[in-house]
Length: 397
Ligand SMILES: Nc1nc2c(ncn2[C@@H]2O[C@H](COP(=O)(O)OP(=O)(O)OP(=O)(O)O)[C@@H](O)[C@H]2O)c(=O)[nH]1
Ligand SMILES: [Mg+2]
Image 1 (cartoon, rainbow, N blue to C red):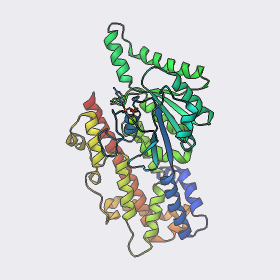
Image 2 (image 1 turned 45 degrees about the vertical axis):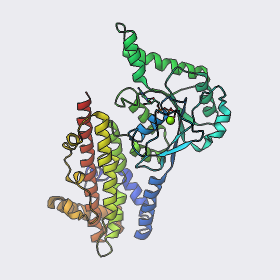
Image 3 (image 1 turned 135 degrees about the vertical axis):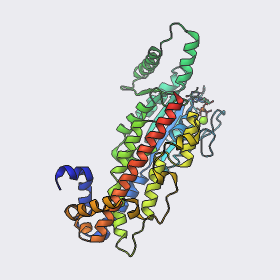
Image 4 (image 1 turned 30 degrees about the horizontal axis):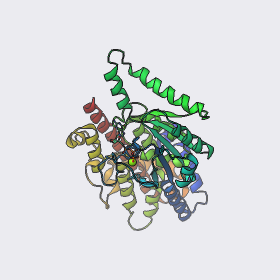
């Protein structure tokens, strides 16, 4: 097998990780190491604080970042006068360790940034969003300075940009220029922050009612690129499924972990019957990460004002339509051609990177089939998610 084919099957990075896991050629130790690495990846905490003036749209923002509609059970209450003076925790529905914290509103006459910093215990958050829906105010700069002085990162979000544009459209019908208005708003925010001593302020203009417009995706992309590598995976998986690029990124992130799930399945095949429970769990998580579960599809249908059945009509993978059952027969998910290809590949290939797996014929085959099946399933769900998104956007256009 030449190196080009190898890359196609498993990337060099994955190979290196695998070699490290198998360095002692002891499969129990390797299995524990792999299991632990999956647990670590899944459980890495990401605490995101959302602050700003009362009524600026903090809770609405938290809901959209969690892919929830305002009226859902787990959603933060919106459009109400907030009386809370304590940070309130809202975990992401699927990635429970991605935690959004709705902080008390700022900007009352008695607001003192440093007191606020103490009350909300600033040090526990990975980064901050400062949400502002109106003009830039003194309290924004005080807050930005307080966060900055604690060595934390913040992103300034100018929210309700749809309202700003609508107002301008009505007031200045003949001279209305959307691009210029957006540029002016952004420049103004950057200038105020810069004058307040923030060197390279990051400002995003968003509308929680129109996530597919303005800077929402740019904001997600920036966050992802600035997060430390070990926190990136959970954040990526938590991103709302409303951008084609976000779906691609999710696919890449999950693809890199597949060899681990396949190894665990292969090790389980050393017992009388390979246990597919963990694969079923993984596949169900793939479905949810791409928003193809019933609840997420419903939300997407509501957001874009489209019938749920229309969205579902573009889903092609049979395993997305049905519930994936626990006694899944992995071999049945592959064509006989695939199985032959895998078997041939295994003898020459797997032994070269993981003798522990390759030398045990059953384990090798189980690894190959599970790896292959998860890769094809991931491709299918990612393609389905792209088709679902396209359908939703078509309807919104
Ligand atoms: N047009 C528009 N309205 C928005 C947007 N985001 C939030 N709103 C509305 O603004 C109002 C206040 O939003 P909330 O999310 O409750 O604001 P909040 O900052 O959590 O308010 P408090 O909890 O009272 O501090 C609600 O009626 C929202 O529907 C947006 O992007 N565009
Ligand atoms: Mg609120």
